[in-house]
Image (tube, rainbow, N blue to C red):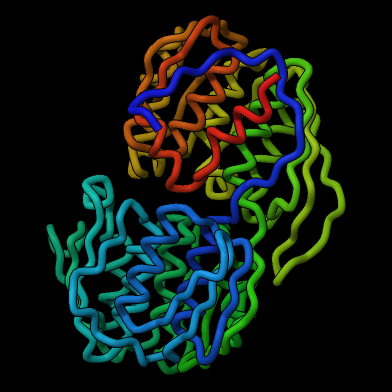
Length: 432
């Protein structure tokens, strides 16, 4: 692909598609497969750059990962506590999930020395939120600014059980602590201020770990655990589906059928918000695959209206907020996004970047420390925009271009490969 891509407005979008495998589940399937005894088969694995970074790190630590086809892999695990020391630095690329969850795994491997790093963006993202609770369990972690930023060095220890009261609702923080607890005798617990996505808990149970949850937003894992290889079917990623849900909602005359999308209730905030905005979305053929709820989603164009979102809803749709900002531009009335300060420490400062780039298209947006305020509907005009090397920003700007008058030039479209390798091909196929 060229360094830039020319995008044009759409008359309508029509078709049936499957979005890539869920990125969060893909990471966790690779990690638990590598820690389990025996063989794990992962079907529908996201072939994006982030899961590839996870696979490379695990291979360097002794797991055998074999490609069966484009979206299916075989993992032969080492068994808990049996990872081998890597001979080189482990590179997580652009993947915060890889780096943060690997911290929990490596901190609990007694005597194992590891060094972790990532690209420029990842090295600027906060890691103290993981190193702090792990250090309270007895982990030895060194890094820039006292372990707050990568590169990080970790010397694995026999950890002690711990009840961590997290100040933020973060599946990555929660998962890192739970993974550290797999080799720790007794119960390791995490309590969050709001419910974050629960893929780790579901998959840990499927692999044989004893995991307990209650209504007080606390989850616990019993260690030492024993994990046994499984067959994991990865559903389509609802965060990737979000771009098409918004696109079909705002481009008049559109209708799309999205097959095999994961509808885990900790991830369906996007559906609730769009339906509150008046979107026409139906869930068809609901079913369960490998412990995860799945459905086909039919979306038709509709006149959206503004809404307010914040509080405990944010952890359930934090990755979808950039494209929801685009939906707000097409909606009648005012949309307020608040309590979303976490977006400032993603692959980019997504609040600032979305406001900046949508303004280039003529949008009027108020940026607040923890969110955005948008009055719609607004008319956009094509311009040259940049995703700031952020995959979700790139695809959100592509959705915005569908409504803009004239041509929009998107720089560095290739960054979408992190989570959606075929996004641009799919967009062309749906264009009418």
